[in-house]
Amino acid sequence: MKIISWNVNGIRAVEKKGFKEWLLSSGADIVCIQETKANPCQLTPELLNPGADGFDIVLCGDYNIAHKPIDLANPKANEGNAGYLPEERAWMDTFTSAGYVDTFRHFCAEPKQYTWWSYRFHAREKNIGWRIDYQCVNPSFIEHVKSSVILSDVLGSDHCPIMVEVE
Image (cartoon, rainbow, N blue to C red; front, top):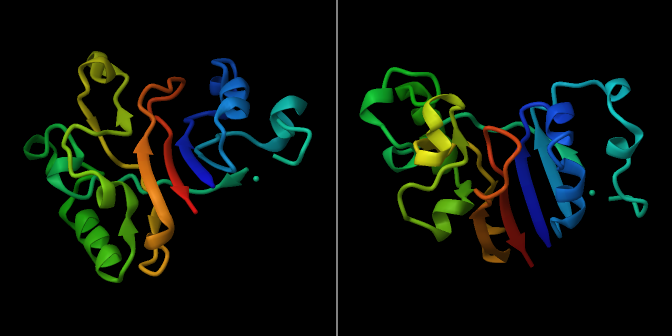
């Protein structure tokens, strides 16, 4: 089962950038979208019901916290900025200490892996970003997680989708 999560930063804007086509071709069993910035009455019928077979959409929130220095391009320069404040990182420490597993870091310890880039200064092209989108699981479920990846090639938002595959 593939579960994809994506902060689309405006569902109506991303729809104009090929969201429906991406959604239907993603191969996901469940798609969680954040920051839709729209009411159902503002959406097209095609977006409200993208698949005739009852295709599994779940709305949820992203964390907006870069947990560790490895999770952003310039940790020292951002220590006083929202998303990397000491109290936010401490909350993530408490969260993971309680047993929740950051699935991406469970599989990947490589730096320069981000899920959000500012629209300014060509940050995405330069890969100057932050990893602030997460898929976390409880400890008893981690054995069922086969992979966790960042889909950085998918455009349409200042965030990119992330995907976890579970059995």
